[in-house]
Length: 99
Image 1 (tube, rainbow, N blue to C red):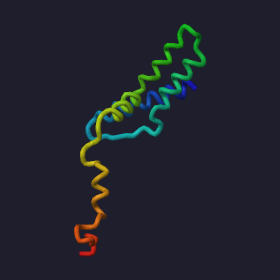
Image 2: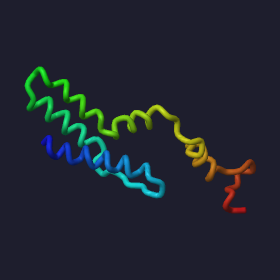
Image 3: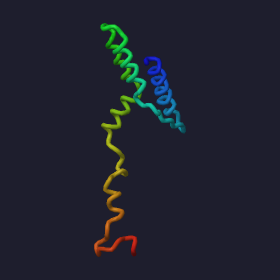
Image 4: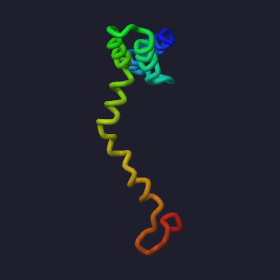
């Protein structure tokens, strides 16, 4: 379990570093799975005084990015009001497409 977690963990860091190169864009198909598996392996298979090492799983680059996406507001162009205004009738009750 820890070995698979390390594989995903390393792949996530490789993708994160590769996306810093201009013109390249990769997406991870198993976002936080590496860090979670590493944390579980430390919690389940390591003796009690060393269980704090499970926090190393939180260094997976996906966890800070998830927090960032929850805190930072989305761009102004993605307002849900824009979609509602497209199909509404005008002042005379006629549909815009019929004109």
